[in-house]
Image (cartoon, rainbow, N blue to C red; front, side, top):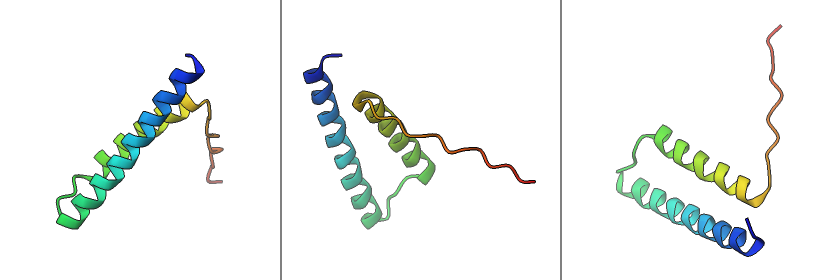
Length: 67
């Protein structure tokens, strides 16, 4: 993907995330909030897509085992 196209996509994703945050706040204020898990899934999907396009990867946490 070319740099300019990537920047354009990243810009759109930032805008979508901002809009989703605004919608979330309005829904909370009106008491019409959907299930939290649904919102988290959508946000996680957008975040993963943004990270992929931005070329940034988050480190996966090391698994912790109970001994």
